[in-house]
Image (cartoon, rainbow, N blue to C red; front, side, top):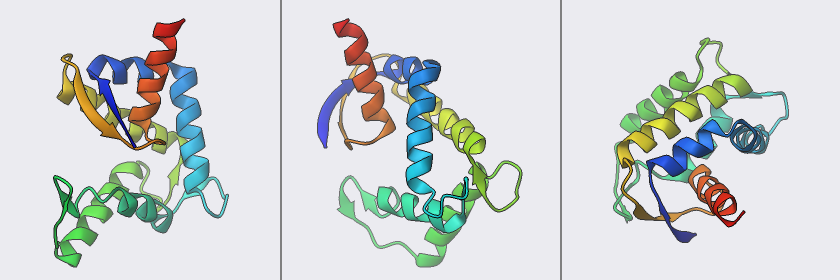
Length: 137
């Protein structure tokens, strides 16, 4: 983890950089696709969602959630990614939904810089690294 400064423009510019964004999406998809069938099953997506621990913590403090409610949330997230409702998420669905989520984060952040703690392999970290590389050039 590292502390980084970013704003909405950092994220928007990353998403609009087709080469950088698509490469990051492809790498993450390949990493999640445990059986290498070119599709993400519910269990493959669930593993990633659970590692994020978004719903199990509140400002870094563990929170006990109802397991049924947590399961419904994860089901709902999977459905959000599975655009054609075939029970699996392909690369294009993964890319499209991730792009929407990233742009929603950019809108939420706005254009005033904020400091955030970022996971080393996160899309936000990749956005910051891309911006740093562009500024250094």
